[in-house]
Amino acid sequence: MTVDVDAVCFDLDDTLCTYTQSSADVLSQAFERVGVVRLWTVDDYHARYRDYLDESAHVDDLRRRCFADLAVAAGADRETGLAVADEYSAVRDQNAVDLLPGAREVVETLGDRHRLGLVTNGAPEMQREKLAAIGLSDSFDAVVYAGYDAAAKPASEPFEVALDALGSAPDRAAHVGNSLSSDVAGARAAGLRSIWVPFGDDCPETPDPAPDHTLGSIADLATPP
Image (cartoon, rainbow, N blue to C red; front, side):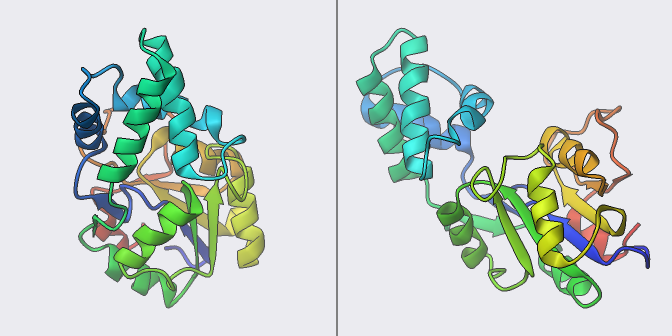
């Protein structure tokens, strides 16, 4: 990281860690346990996730509201959606996450020279479990659960909250994440430098919005751009 950067913020999911079981598999198991055919996809769920943040105090409540509406949209009843949501929660283990290769070393290395923040879209209780599972609970000087402590990414607010807690400013900070639409767009909106680390096959030839830097993996940040 260049010497004029004094704070580095990270995304969590698919940037530092990833579920050992995909969300698509969890949803499929939930449908099977309820005994109904697949009525919607994980992409449908993710597309509507933010619509329920303001009215939900807990991720399980958010999912029940969302799945009930998705069930009705698919021609089923709300009770079916609620049942699928409950089974999804039963199958999903927030502790079943793996630290991505090199992530711990990067966090430790950058933490020696920078103040570190975590800006993650996700319910606090859910994200705290993941941080504990991967051993990074005490690695960040500031943690912002976007959508709960502040507006969800890509809004600029969660980055502003993090930088205020870190005692930094946008022109002295960078954000690292895997999502173009949440991390890169949000960092740009808040004026931070954006470092994009594509996850899986999500790597378009011409990323939009364009990040300031693109890395092949989180481990590459051990020798910062």
